[in-house]
Image (cartoon, rainbow, N blue to C red; front, side, top):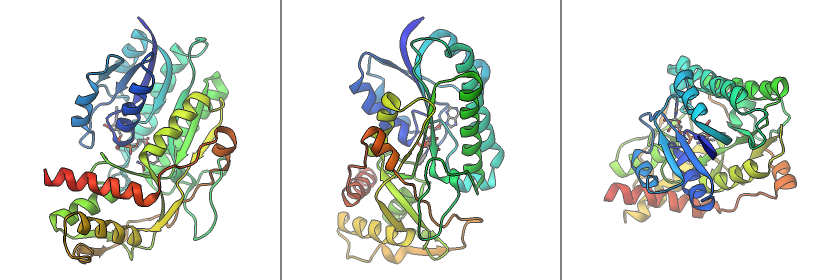
Amino acid sequence: MDKGSVLITGGAGFIGIHLLKEMLDLYPDFHFLNVDCLTPISNTLELVELDGYPNYTFHQLDICSYQQMSNLFKEHELFGIIHLAAETHVDSSISKPKKFVRTNVLGTLNLLELARIHCINKPWFGKFYQISTDEVFGHLDESGSFKEEDPYAPRSPYAASKASADHLVRAYHHTYGLPMVISHCTNNYGPFQHEEKFIPKIITNALKKEPIPIYGRGDNIRNWLFVEDHVDAIQLIYSSGLNGHTYNISGKDELTNLELADRITDLVDKYTRQPKGTSRNLITFVPDRPGHDFRYSLERKKIWDHLRWKPFTKFEDGLKKTVYHYVEKFLL
Ligand code: NAD
């Protein structure tokens, strides 16, 4: 039995790998348990790099297996839980909704139940931190932003499964006294995101000279946050967020999907020394996704007022780093 472990679920995913890389250096006195079942989108190469850290262990486990997770909770005294593991691809949630309910709802319920049994009333247990999404609030037209207390109105199976998980986390707080926080974040971008996701797909298709699919006319609007800024906010909320509270985390930059694709393809052309416009010609409009949310936007006043967090990275700088990462990987 050790003391001082922090459980991070989904630590082989896009955000998880960035979070672990930063926390392992910053908090050498804590032991980090990374639980991930390793799905095809996981960063297995990056994961190997973490093995050298003395304050880190990887556990290839499925959060949906109560037995597997129960053994882990029995073996370690947890100081806290940061729960990122999820099925996250909205398109896949439309074709395979059950998988999303299994992982995002039942998997979260398993963790909550084990936290209820093993962590509540332990003086050293900090909090259960549920990483949620802006998509639980539904969508907006051109104006306005969602506040933390706005009602949920999810519109995709992915968003509905995340919303259900959030409700369970709050229910465990109110019913059993589980200390917890929830954060909702807008779209993240950065290195190490799987190539099935929007930005990496644009970059890799441009590099492979394959059509770049854009839903509808590309006029859906998203708010973008550089992943390292999200990771900073997560650490702040984990250490200083108030018990029972919810925080929005949002970037400053809103763009239509077409504007974003134009900027990315221009950067690809620049880094691969092609005439400007070469990759833009690959942009191809495809039939819209069913129920495609028009716009997401979150107000971030509370996280500034409580924790003095605001996004640090300028969009053009984050985008350059992101595109360069995939170009370099492709050319190696
Ligand atoms: P990701 O899909 O890149 O990574 C998720 C990780 O969870 C993967 O490594 C996967 O193997 C793991 N996982 C899936 N099912 C599991 C299971 N049953 N048991 C154990 N591990 C399992 O996702 P991400 O983009 O890093 O997102 C992480 C979290 O942040 C998710 O909860 C997501 O809803 C939330 N979020 C993401 C964004 C974004 O833009 N990426 C924005 C807001 C919120």
